[in-house]
Image (cartoon, rainbow, N blue to C red; front, side):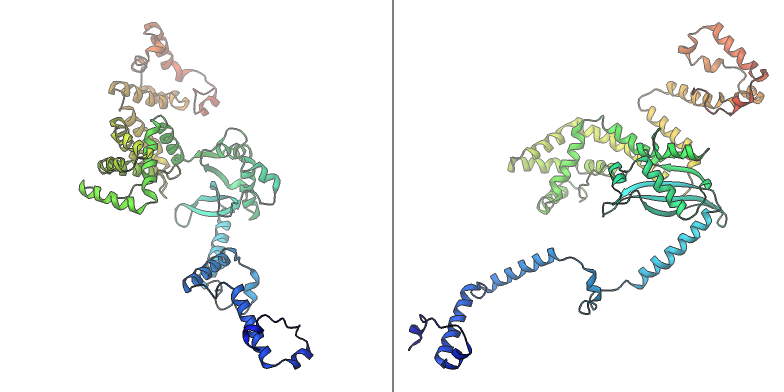
Length: 460
């Protein structure tokens, strides 16, 4: 019987008796059948080497995506060679340096008055944390020091009631207080609190600051000046045309994900003899980046104009035409030049107040000079002189200063001040004389002592 006929023969199941009765021809035929069936069922054997490599890479990629770390790998001797244990440096930092620093800081805070600086943030695991920094006077160094104290969770992920409430003023305050109570630090040592100006932190009601005032009498509350300056600049920029912000974002987006467009743009930069710089992304959270975005866009204005003129002829895309129309608008460029003049002043202030040194003593003088500089942009000098005098009189009319006889030597009469306030005096000489007489008689009157403690007499 030849192989062709044997291919159509069906053999019984392999029993012990059938194995003994089989001949060599039957065994060869069975091997031939199994090989042919396996090649038909397995397409990899008929595939080309290139196709096999692609299939193996796809399977490897799928396994890589589905693979997850298991703690049982640490106990398996097969994986112990390539799973590296924690390094000596990381163990020293976590278990020695970190713990010793925290213990020494806690011991200092137990017997020292300190201020608290905090801000909330969300980490990569989507757990809301509050970063806590403390500032205190270090008697050994003879200066004010600031140290990181703790990173405390605002609420536990399994505490569903607090998770539903969110990062409210109540939860932030409780998280802050618990972090100090956990280390047995007396809460009476807290004398100051500072944070950003969000409502949950600095709101007048139901905030961390309002609870601080309620629990710690006489505590000093201060908003972050850097946040305030950034909010001032952001609110002012909202009054500019929306096309200014759209231009900065659209230009960055056009070049961001294309190396080809970036390489083409380099030719226009070289033709215009401009430095080869990339366009920057305007971010709302990076305070100091807004000024860099504006200055970079003005620096690359001419090559950008030529580049998009060329692209309009090649690409009939609405986004390219919109960018070109904005670049051709002289008012848009004028707004960017205005921002390029004003934003560096906010940036320099932000940089100065982010210093690690104590600069609160310079806060009033620097902000006053900057405010006057902005006013001079649209006010004449005579109006500014009135403002200078009003700032001076605000100090003069404080109760402690106004009731002193020594103040009368410097300011014996209020005529110069009242002459600058025509809306109040209405140019009535009798009224001006009456106010001036009361000013001279004020130190001789029997005024209650508690009135001298009022800092702002114009607030009721």
